[in-house]
Length: 464
Ligand code: FAD
Image 1: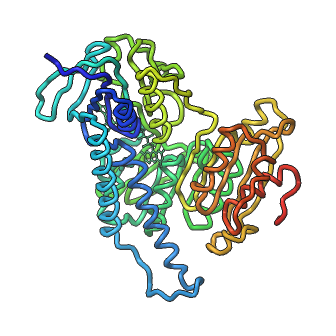
Image 2: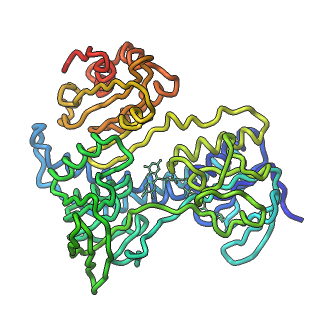
Image 3: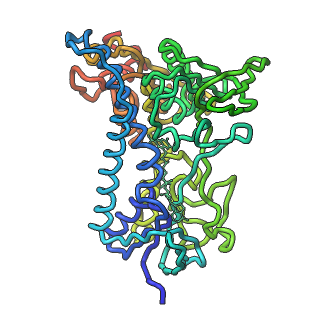
């Protein structure tokens, strides 16, 4: 006899464990099947550990500038082991918190690798290889993603590293070539550059962070170059050869092949959804371009089988996975949840300087055929940024010239990843630029820069 649940969730990342907690809150008998550790990519090798290391990098940079603030410190330097230990402690604390939240909500966590046998049955292979089966009224697939690779630059975990590998180095490499300047690539470039590596950042597209607004890419490229990173854009990797403890990377730049000799290479060129071996084919679950197809309630073409997170189309982000998980289980519980609003998703990258956006870039807004107004406000004119000693960067807003609706907001600069929140709320509620501008903002705060950028769409910025 197999155990019977109302809902079984395959994978305990930020999609799966949040879905499980919400299901528990709704009184559903819930199981989450996890082959490694609940928390998934995000907690163990993604969002959390990278941000802990970025914080060490920030503290190091700030400590080196302490004199500017009238604070004397003896020479600041990195203790990599202590930084890594702190990262492990923060991850462990969050892991324990996640486990106890699952227990508190009466979710049964089953350790093992799951595979759909039927739309209401999952076979689980435990770490000792023993097989068992559970059955469930509904199933949520949340198996996430794994590191991708390029055939000409195979990851060996020693010299050519994945984002998982580079999170636990015991020594700062003298030189690091980073392949891919998306969010993961630029965050590690910032971490290891601040830690003392000579960083070479290679991007195939003509600009860094190619999904961002073009002005944000340009500003980030200028900032990275000023910091001393070597940037190669519009550059394609021809091959990586490992020789002893070093790598030789051939890069095609402006029609010429150049060779770079570095101690380590980081492969940060994308991730792959985990859709193989989980029983999709047997059940006829529709897959398109490598992602599971779902409707706005996150249900696949097989009734009662749902999918969320990195295995479905849309932004591969932890908060998106979590919201999709809540929608799926609320639907399973018979509620009428609002679908996820994909027009108002914050995208945050915690490199130095930070960048964040919501909605359309200026180019996307113009391509949509609308008349567009742009408002910009630089942090140099924001008193709080001055107090923090971080006046670089700006807020850029893109709004509809006719109705005033906020179409997109793009920020580069100090705590951009926190600052974006109010613009996400505004976009979610379809506010206009002037409606947000007319909300009274506290002084002195960084948020005033967003208010001023909104006023700037109407030529009304006060301090610039
Ligand atoms: P995952 O987190 O990948 O979890 C899937 C889980 O399923 C895993 O625990 C896995 O072990 C388990 N699993 C897989 N197959 C099976 C099976 N057959 N049986 C049982 N268990 C299984 N996103 C952000 O929003 N903010 C960030 O700052 C951020 N930083 C990142 C930094 C890095 C370096 C990386 C790599 C990613 C980052 N992301 C960030 C992306 C984020 O981690 C993912 O979008 C998020 O983890 C996806 O959640 P998920 O639940 O879909 O999958």
